Image 1: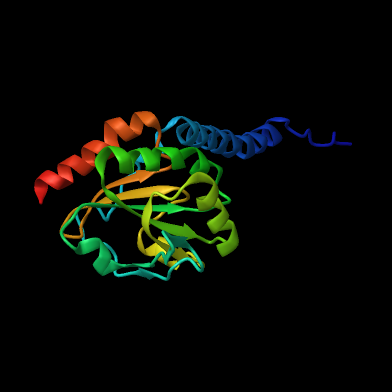
Image 2: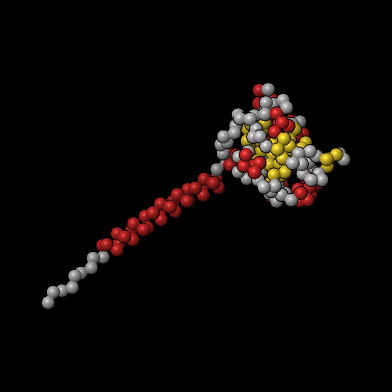
Amino acid sequence: MTAPPTISSEQPRRSFGWVIAPLIVFGFLAGAFAFSLSHGDPSKLPSALIGKPVPSTSFDALEDLRAAGQPVPGISSADLSDGSVKVLNFWASWCVPCVQEHPLLIALKERTNVEIYGVNYKDQAAAARRFIGRYGNPYKKVGIDPNGRGAIEWGVYGMPETFVIDGKGRIAYKHVGPISEQSLLRDVIPAIEKARLAN
């Protein structure tokens, strides 16, 4: 009578190792990606539009928004190419960083006398008007992007985002995320000054 064959314990261990190894590698890569997202500077994200003409987009006026008793007009590509440096800011009333950034847009206008245009993104008109009524209106013109198609054309990652446009209608600088006091002085104002000198 022959003894039953012995089952080696080596084979299951090897199979288990092949399952665990990819999970460990995936976990490491996911952790590294999460770390870079949380510790990186989103304003450093590259934009393929830098140096190129503004996208051919138009944004209808924000309904019933008025300034000095007059309706505030919407925005066209031609508005951004009339020979003077401008700033275009994408914002929304539901965006908490937009609330934090808003006083700095008002300060930017006061410090540089630059024309700022605002694009209200995927918002309700009443909420957008309340936002401007509460926090102030730094914008010369305000357009709406109700379905986000304009933001896609501009390569917008999320709210808020800000573009400096030179006098020839080319994108000179892009700031991803809310403008801070530091980035206002270090990045945005110098980008405006540089664009003005290049005109």
